[in-house]
Image 1 (cartoon, rainbow, N blue to C red):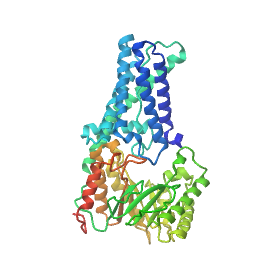
Image 2: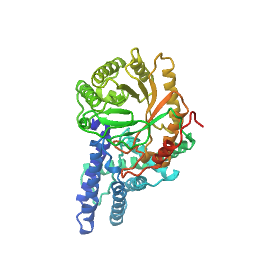
Image 3: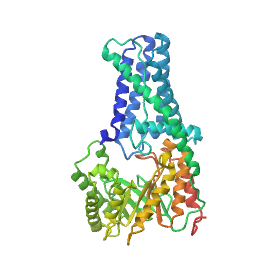
Amino acid sequence: MLAALHGVFLVYLLVALAWNASVCGAAVASRERWERWAVLPLQIALVGVLLVDRARPHAPPLLAWPWVAGLFPLACALALAQNVHAILERGARLTDIPILLANVGLLLCSALGAAELAGAALPPGAAALLHDHALLQHLLGNRLALWSSLSWHVPLLVRRDDARSVPGLLAGVFMAAVAGFLAVMLAAFLGTARAALDTFAAEPRVAALRADLRVAVLRDSRAWDGPGQLEALRLPADTPAPGTGPWPSRPLLLELDAPDAWRLHLPVPDAAAAQMLDGAQALADAWQPDWLLPFPDPDGRGALLLGVRSPAGWRALFDLAAERVARVSPRTRLAVRLAETGERSHALLLALAADPAVVAVAGPRLLPGPAAAGGPALADATLDTWERWLAPLQAPPELWILAAGCSAPAYGEVAQARYVEGCLARANGRQAVKAVILDAWSDAGHTLGLHRAGGAPRLAGRRVLELLAAPRTEADR
């Protein structure tokens, strides 16, 4: 599972670290030893941070802490100092150019990223570099990097000595090509990033929420002091049942996720399904939730984790989950979140809603789309699709937005605040939408938090608190 999600990124980290270690190993003069005791140890530590974050999917990323993030621009600055020092000593080479350009780009992007994580509300021009960096992470990191991880890159050093073999020569050319790719992609994506950030200016605003719209902020830990009319909790399926309270005083939506251990070793499909079913029954028994999402998105991560792709297969699994949950918590109703809006997702919804319906609540995850698809306005098309899907059903499940969020490290705090408010405004204006679950309270296993790692609210968090504290209305004004 780890290799499937992060294989390209892990290969880059290991190759870059091996190259930089070889460069430092060749630094023998006393004036060059700082590379060994300053540059290389720092890069080893940063690679360790990134690897730890990959293996702890439900924990707040170490990189989300500003002081950790600040080590990345420091590493880039030290790498640039090494680049310039080596060039001044032995003269410039053609292969130095892409490494210098890549390190300059990584320095700018990581410095702005560290500033954002420390609480800076970056202006649109600077936030475009954040999104530019996120697009690079998506391409040379993880396809989910725009919301689920921070795949920052370590800088590259330049060789001080001459290559003494053909493999050594080829290695130098290869690393220059990798650096050239980094530099070219950062330059090429900048226009796309600016266009994407511009689309957030058109996000709808809302002054007051309607009285019957329920709102919750999804959490990854037990803490019942969040805003909203509901409590929403995400837990790995192997979480031990709590022995004592405190218990939530408001209606509870419980979402099950894959155990952390699956990141390192994914069980065979039957064993994975059995573990999710066991977790659904055990946690339903312990928590007595009002609503339960027993599986991750069946048309997305769930299909990858459990190996189930047919609507009939998912209906059978949901029937089993409903039967087992009903034994221990008769009041609990099942819910399903779908990640896509294609025909395969539609067929899956029809299977779960077929009489007798096995789900009482269904809905999408809302994330900003690419600029070509309208950016954040893609949410309108998604909700239009869902209303069209549910309209012909005789007894449709309630339509909830079961996750709505935007990554501040990928788009900036200003864009995140506009998108979160835009999703609330969209839900507010559609009577068919009964509830909105905002994803999430803090950055835990993702980058969507309304609060930073230290607990301070981001702009989006403050805006959500304002809207939830304002008097409700019967209709949007």
